[in-house]
Image (tube, rainbow, N blue to C red; front, top):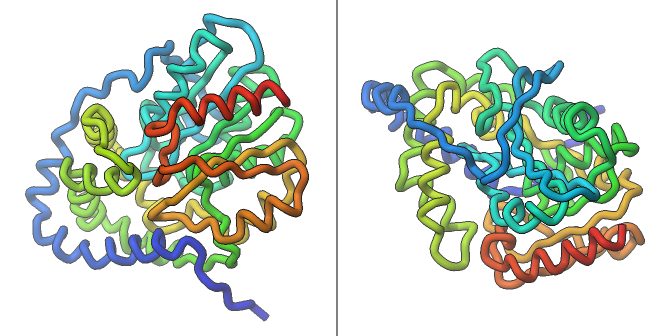
Length: 326
């Protein structure tokens, strides 16, 4: 008998449903949306490191940034998932650790300079395998990983599958800690969102500069840096930019039971950095961490999901201590 599940991260779910309603209005402006969609913008490098690429067996061509000025224990950064995601989200950490230790930032499948194929299922297993391939084929050593938001679930899945590749995990505002099982609409919502007319129009609406500014502002206590808005806009105006976000909007990137099937299975040192987040609940985090000696959670205040942007000194101080201990 199938057990009825409740919904975790309700605001993410509700936002996806709300966006479904917006497709009606978006479809009315299809001709405009099509014109906007075809106005591709030059995408500069997100960070100062060397930009390289490799062929993944599961995700096609993947790109990553690397700074290897110093030897030492490698650090891998993983950006979040949204309509305009890229390594730019991890820029403050890349700039800080560059020149101090080898640092890498992977452009996840469907984002940044990674391949954006329309013929690929952008699901958790794909992202976990991409992380595994990045570490095993491009870095070639055990790594410390810092993951942001939903990518925390991908990193945890990769670490469960290949614990030999990971030395520690640091999760910034991770999803999956509401304490409830999650039930997502998944495939039927994706089929709706991916209708050609609707998907193009909806994505054009979501990636208008004022809309990007609105959503980014929800993750900042202060003002969003203009450079962040501008890069997100450019990243979302690339050929094929809408394909992966449609899987995100239809909730197919989430693991329903992440708390038990992923996080509870981790045996390596795990640090969570969090405070408030308009999209994510941390209700179960304190009790979960208290029962597991390899976990610790540190509140970085005030922040709304991107503490490494607004509280960088505190975040890197914590990371320096964490990475020195592992």
